[in-house]
Image (cartoon, rainbow, N blue to C red; front, side, top):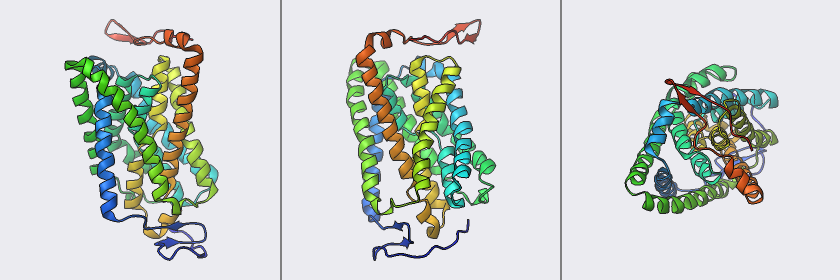
Length: 345
């Protein structure tokens, strides 16, 4: 991935990589970064444990055995999103290294932020957690395949390093706390409700804090070309919209449509950042360093806007909105499934 050198401009004395449009700064010591990462990971595990307290084992297993929602989310996650990243990179004519990072974002599995926000928009938590678990597992094979198919225009796909150990750690950090939460919900349902309320609020606050910390720690590197700002803004919108529409086509209930939409639009940007740091030469990091952060911030902002609109909608038409939700849109008939008619407002 060779890039033409650009004329240097004045930057801070402690900049590690610098040119006329952006500077990459050594913002923190490794010790501080390790402490921060450990604290966030621990809090996130506790949040996933609390969300697991909302899951019923029978319903969760039902989504695994009859994976209509999982299939729809996987189609969006590893079908639509990589194609959307490929189209956006070509449409905006970004540099090859920037195009590759946009593509990496599109190939990542869903992030745990979708689980927290699914709770707040009255989504199907059993479906949300099963989708995140399966997409993280599928990423072990689908990410290399998607990058091989779409990245060859810009770079040798062998040069992109997939951190399988990080994916495995993410999977364990997701599955174990959720499984413990499911067990607690099964044995002590009353206590599980209290844990869920505390954890859901904590998770929502944690999402905001992480976004703010990322913006502050790397504020010196936010000056990048406008094209990446635009892509980082509209890319999650594409994910939310396509996920919702595909779920509608699959005749899912509105709660599941919202759940699939969040799962599709909210990517695992931490995984993308890891891949970028492992695969992109340091002299080219300046062009792409903050794009995962941009996507992360805008996916949270857009999801919060959707949440606010949904809450206003409930306040104005709450009884009608709640009445149209059903326990499940699927009917088990003769060993198969009848999707039936989706409940309308």
